Length: 395
Ligand code: ADP
Ligand code: MG
Image (cartoon, rainbow, N blue to C red):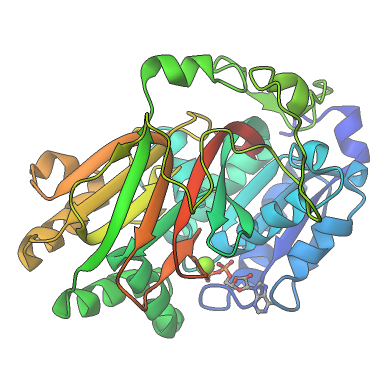
């Protein structure tokens, strides 16, 4: 037990952030149940922090003395990790801060990353308590791997960082509409999907993307794909992102007329008002049922959307379904997704591409766009991947 925890690690603690209201409101009981026991048995020192309001965790990690913490662990849904990642990227020392290992324990109703982390252990799919135990075990083992981040640019010019997904149309609508079924837990997505299916609609807009090619993914690799998994407590040198990202000669901080923006330079995208670069692909269809870009295998505990995705593969897994798909066909896709078999359905309306960047220009208004399951401002939006920019405690 705990054999990988060095002396250095014992001096530092895991910060475990719990959102007591996530999921069915049981996250605290998940901690006092199996998680506390597992961490104690594995001799993993940790401190539990309960969030009191939205953006509490974001403010907390923005100001925290990160030298005190070996990792930040979220016991909640994906929404709380989204807060933490954006809080880390808002710091003056973002480049160092975002290298803090991040862990996830499923405590929400949307546990996409937790389900993905379990999938990366190559074990068969599990749900509920078994998923919690699996993620608890991964956490106690403490192996760290590179985690891709998406830089997402909104029409207001605001930028945010995503570790999971960008959605528009069916998936985004279901995610937000199903909030009202929160008391039923993860089943809320299924209920929401069935309701939305009954009133299926199409969404008009323009979609463009930069295809990932095998060459491009190795040439622009920001962290070596062969980077070995390391324990988050080992005394591995904390290589700064600037050193690692030697392929980019540009400064890491853009200084505009009166705005200083933190974070990596988005070198693949042109401004939202300008045409996309010439090497991008513009999708001919303008009528969609859904557009979904994801960095991980799972969209929910029972939805394996990108079976081959890896946390640091440097790819955005882009799916879209064009208008004309029938209700039964769409239902079949979602049912097949439980086993990740939707691509084998040979649905002519479903397209899957591995990309490095994408832009969506919605015409239908009003509408919903979600980033990591959280609703963001509606309008033109684009995103690009920053390979291996963060670090994830994974199997
Ligand atoms: P779920 O998967 O159940 O939606 P999340 O972790 O995604 O769980 O949390 C849902 C939302 O609640 C997120 O937007 C998060 O920022 C917010 N949040 C976090 N802590 C609190 C709190 N103490 N009270 C209210 N909202 C919170
Ligand atoms: Mg959520």
